[in-house]
Length: 219
Image 1: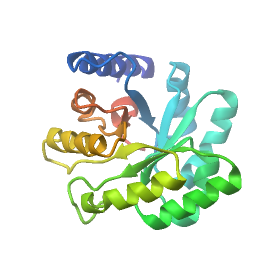
Image 2: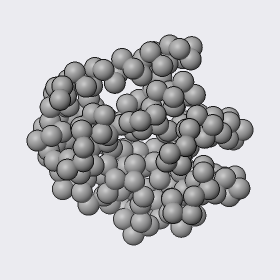
Image 3: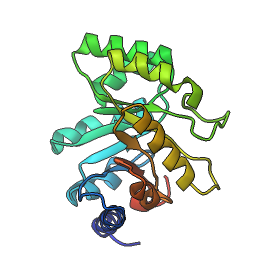
Image 4: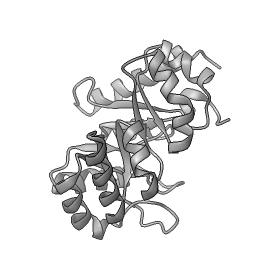
């Protein structure tokens, strides 16, 4: 396997080429290195190679490894890209700089309360169940207008997030999410992972969540 620095450079180049192909300006997509299940020793080489935005799926896992890493390397932004239980809202607000999985009114309420108490306001993405899959998190497309309105009133909403159905061509789902975002005046689009991030970039992704292409198989 190539070095972490080489993998990071390769993915950065692929993002830049996809953006250029779509006529988007350089630097318009943020690469989130999804480090879930990987330990600090695996993460440090990517930090050394210059990566500064990382993603985790679970609050407890992130709390166990990131404070020390962030103390050693100031300026790292941490994004929560997995599902969030309302009773973990306060911990998430304290730890993360962005939360990509806001998907229900009760979580909006819990996050707003936690942000007020902590005087800290991480960016929030509303997760949309873009493929209408019962086993997947995210609010239904039909429920988005009401959830978005309530969230925008109390949270710093940065955009929308979605994960297309596995095994299907992702482009139509990315295009649909981009259209929904435009229709609601939302600019951020968290979409695209290791297998499809270039397609996501061409369709407007402002954040791509890449794990295995950077780190290899999960531990």
